[in-house]
Each structure stands twice: as C-alpha cells, then as structure tokens.
Amino acid sequence: MKKIIFATGNEGKLKEIKVILDMEGVEILSMQEAGIHADIEENGTTFQENAIIKAKTIGELTGEIVLADDSGLEIDYLNKEPGVYSARYAGEDTPYSIKNQMLLDRLEGVEMEQRTARFVCVIAAALPDGRVITTRGTIEGYIGHAPAGENGFGYDPIFYVPEYRCSTAQLTMEQKNRLSHRGKALRAMKEELKVYLEAEV
Ligand code: IMP
Image 1 (cartoon, rainbow, N blue to C red):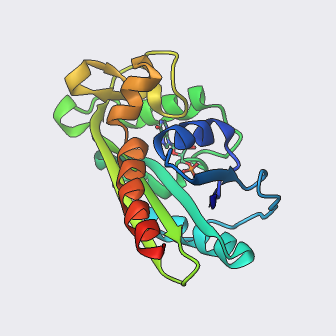
Image 2: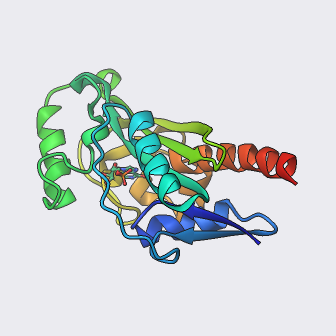
C-alpha cells in the first residue's frame, strides 16, 4: 500500500479529500494519522507559495508523498482581498458571520457587475525525489447582498454561483464538490499522481 500524507489538520477537508482522491493501492493519511505534529507558518504571498511551503516541510520530515492545499476568496473590487489572508481576515477567531458582514459592508452600494469574486485552491505535492507538482482550481461567482444558506463553511453564505442562482452555502456537499475550486484542484492532482505512481512501479 502506497502512503500519501495530506498536510491538513482540518478533518472536514480530509473527508472530502479522501473521497475525491480514492485510488487503488493508495492510503491517504492525515498528519495526525501519520503521527506528525508540526506548526507551519504560512508566510507565502500566494496560494501556490503557501501550499508548497506546507507540502515541502512535511515531505522533508517524512520522506513520503505529501500533499497540501491553500485556498481562499478573491474579491475583485477589493483588490483580491482577503486572498491568502482569508482565514486570518479580521482575526483568525472572529466568527464568519462577522467577517462576512464586514465584507458586505465594504461592498455597500457596489453594483452587481463589480462584485465579481472567486474561490481559489492550489494543491501542492512534494514527491520523495524532490520534485513538486501543483494544481489549481477556481470557481467564479459574485458577492451577494446578504448572507444565505446554512451548508458549507467560511465565506460560503456570501458567495453566489450564477448558474445555480444561490450561494455555495445553499448547495449540497455533492453539488459543491463537483463545482468547487478544491474539487477541481483535487481531481487534477489525482491525474498527476496516477501518472507519477504508474511511472514509479
Ligand atoms: P486554508 O485552510 O488555509 O486553505 O484556509 C482557507 C480559508 O479560505 C478558509 O478558512 C475560508 O475562510 C476560505 N475558504 C476556502 N475555501 C472555502 C470554501 O469552499 N468556502 C468558504 N470559504 C472558503
């Protein structure tokens, strides 16, 4: 059985990741399951830099294939804020009901055409031979005028998907996985890993 470690402490994310990355002969482990404890400083200025920092740091500790992701919300009218600071925006421990309201306030009076936004996810794979592969997924939408929906997490209640005429917090998990930045980046990574693993045997 080939081991792949996913460098996340977020169990919810890991569940989603295990479903999408399901491959024969491959076991996906969380850092906890792999017995690794590390506090990594995400000091990159892009999603790609942060994902690579996390994957490489854990890769160097373990010698296994290590995946890591970094994601966030870019709002065009706010010069792509909160971007890589999405989790830290207005303070890491501030509830999302407040963070979402702060963003809505900053967009007060802004017309729909100027409220464009996207969720971005970059996944990095640090391979035992020292190479790093990255994949990227995005979902385009716009920031609504009020929060809506109870599903999902984070900025989902204010992120509207035009095709579905609702927020990502109003989609089922299956619908969101099919459309989402993370789903897209993970499926692209799965294809890259298949090629790598096939070439390895
Ligand atoms: P990460 O875990 O460091 O990638 O943090 C990304 C942050 O971006 C999260 O804490 C959320 O604030 C935001 N984010 C990323 N993906 C989503 C999503 O699918 N829905 C809502 N918020 C998201």
